[in-house]
Length: 301
Picture (cartoon, rainbow, N blue to C red):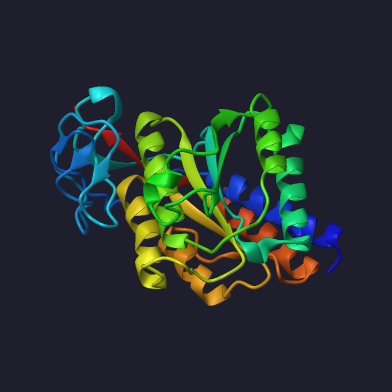
C-alpha cells in the first residue's frame, strides 16, 4: 500500500480512538477500590466482582504492590473515597490521550515515515483542538528499557492542543527506530501514568493508544495474557481504556487480546485495505455515539 494510503489509515485509527473515547464514560460497574497507601504504594490491587471498593487513605501516585494492579491512592495527599456506580446521561468529556509508540528497529523505513506523518498531521489538525495529548516511545534510548518506571514519565507530557502540538512535532522529529520491543514495561508504565492522571482529573476521559508492529521481545515478560492483564487492571480500576493500533508485522490476534482486555474490543488493524478499515471505523464510531447512558463513578463522601 502506498505511503499516502497508510498515513490515512493510521490517522483514522487515532481519530476513531479519539471519537469513541470521548463519547461516553466507563461502563463497567465492578470497580474495586484500593487499600491504604504509603509513599505512593498501595497494599492492595483492584477489586473484582463487587460494586464498591474499600476506602483508600492518603497517597501520591497510585502505585501498588501487585504486578498488574493499579492503586486507589489519590494525588496531592487527598484521601481516596469508596466509589459507587451511578447511571447518568451520557456526556462528552474532555479527552486526554497518551500515545505509546513502538520505535523498535522493525519500525524503520516506510512504517516509521507513515506513523510520524500521521501523528504530526493529527496533532496539528484544528479539528482536534481542545483534546489533550502526550506521547511516550518504546524502547527508551537508555537502559533499563524493560523497567516500567522508564515509561511513567512521558517524552511529551499531556497537554491541550493546539498548544502542545509544537512540542509533540518536535519530539516526533527527534526520534528514530532502534532496539527491541519491551511491550510489558512500556504499557505498564503508560497505564500507571494514565490511571494516576485519571484520578487527578475526574471530569476528563483518559485513554491510552498503544501502537506496535511486532510481538514482545527482549524482556523477561513476553506473555500476551500477562500484558493483557495490565490493560484489564487499568480499565477495571478507573475506566482507562487501551486502544490498540496494529501495524504491518504485528500478530493481530495478540493485539486483539490486549484491546479486548482494555475495554475496546479489538485492535484497529491498519494493515487492512483502506475501504474495509474506513467502514469498520465508521461502524464503531456510530455504535458508541448512539449510547444514551453511561455508568459514571462518583466518590462517596
